[in-house]
Amino acid sequence: MPTDPIELRKLVKQLQSAPTPAFDFLPCVTDVFRLILQDIVGVLGILKSTENVTEAILRETKAGLAVGKLRTHSSKEVADLAKEIVKKWKSSVEKAKQAGGTSNPTAKQNGKFDRKSSTPATPTATSAASGPLGGRQGSAQAATRTAKSDAIKGGTGDVTRDKCIELVYDALASDSSAPVELVLSRSRGIEKCVYNDHGGTTNNQYKQKIRTLFVNLKDKNNPGLRETVVSGDLSVEKFTRMSSSEMASEERKAADNRIKEENLFKSLSAAEQQAETDAFQCSRCKQRKCRYRQAQTRSADEPMTTFVTCTNCGNRWKFS
Image 1: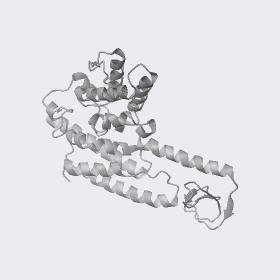
Image 2: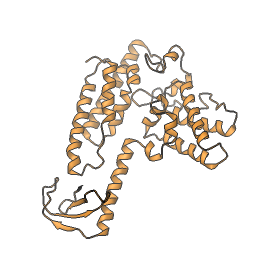
Image 3: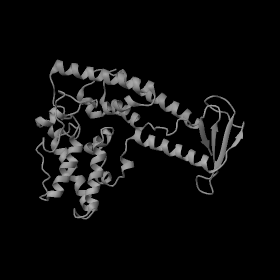
Image 4: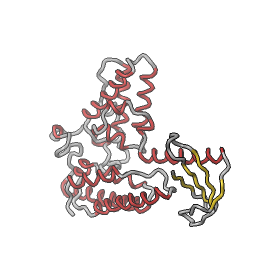
């Protein structure tokens, strides 16, 4: 099928809005997980059939970023399909470049950068820009974009504030192909919000907050955070007030939830003796040799939560 940016953007939103079940060992979640996987596979199947995909379209719709994240999905089917699509799109982009020459990757046709379309990107920015599919372009020796390489200055006149602006710029621009002016604007906006929230640069809270934001923005496993900040999808005001856990990638949040659930089971097992029963059937091995316990994990007017462990295969689940 030919590539329609509008339809492609809708498909990308479907992928980005697909929830990730936190505990795939729970029977009630497993069925939901299967349905979600079917939807993701269906969307990827449509994306795989797209033709004439260009670099401009991938940048405009963020399809490359959305599909690229799924290459590490816990489902092998989803991960393999995402890898095939990325490989196909990369090949299509390279062929288009060889056939028609390399166009300015920083200029969008109908996006936020229209006013920059006639202005060539900074040479350093172009050489260090990341590709629309999340990979690096150019030679392996291309330097990462920094405030120094892009000849950027904080511009506030305060040495501390200028250094912090340049630090945030280093994180935002490291794998971005966005124009220098846009990245600098976001960097200054972030620093200004932190400056106003903490009443200046004289206290340690200001510097600590800047360091926290820098570490989270620089995380190579969370490119989506940098992308949303630079594009403006996440406002600098909201971003500077987020905690580290809120800034974490969806994969990290899911892993943290699994750890919390695991610790909950362990704490309950250490607190009281479990009763054995054959009233429950394990969804994994289909045996009825189980141990269970009940605990009030929510408010007093809510029903108790039952925690069940299969003694045959170790599978665990809970229900209320």
